[in-house]
Length: 172
Image (cartoon, rainbow, N blue to C red; front, side, top):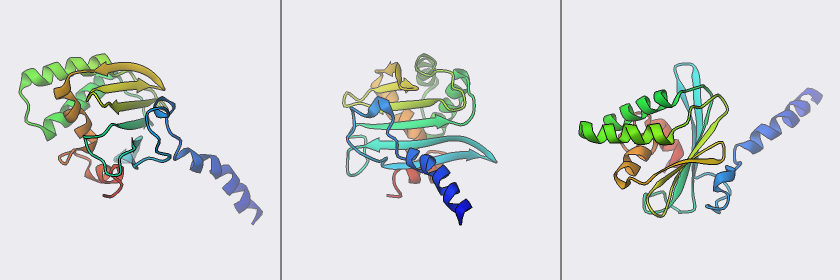
């Protein structure tokens, strides 16, 4: 019994971290817990944990929201860009010149990430993307055509990760 109590005490900090609101959105959203959250695994690899934050009762692109991702692996900005473009191509039928424009945006706003780093993408009332790296503003994408395909990587109906999408959308 004593071992179980010690184990529970050790696990409490991990349990309470599940709903820690990223510092970069504390003044942007009043929600005390995420709208939804999930984990991406590829084969046996733990790639990242993600959470969706919004004050809206029902998620939509009509209201500001934030998608926060804590990486469990290292990725270069080029790797993140290539994967993001592949996901956008999967979900949207876009011309090559649009994808080339998006590639430039990704390379400007994506940092290299290490295990434990957090990227938070905020969908603003201006319909722009503010991208934070470990709590600090790293870049802003003001291209309004870019915003929906970017967030559709995780939240769109044609995402390659439907189970994760459903968890982020709270099973709704």
